[in-house]
Length: 129
Image 1 (tube, rainbow, N blue to C red):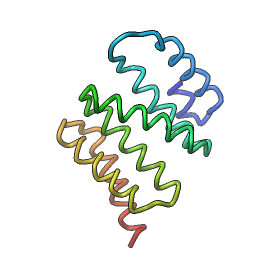
Image 2: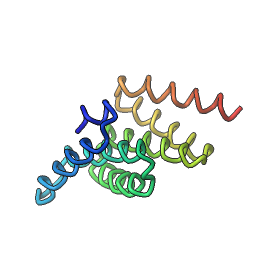
Image 3: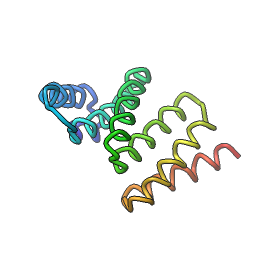
């Protein structure tokens, strides 16, 4: 699914992500891959303009990651929630989500995400004036 998403072949990406979610639906306990898949699928929905679907997946992913104290995935979900809010032109809220995503990524030393989050926060700050 991720490869198709990166190629912007959203139909194929959705198909593979949906299959992944279906296969993992019966798993007991915390399924980190399932949570990560929800975040990835939310990003695909953002790319296709399906904002309600993206919001629903991010809501679930944020709640699960917080409950399981998975701060790596939680910070990623916060970042994509920021993207969603930015897409909805709620720039103030988007900025807060990006800021929180950056802080969490730094606290758990997810350095690959820190740079991306910091750049997005900086870009949005410039856009907001």
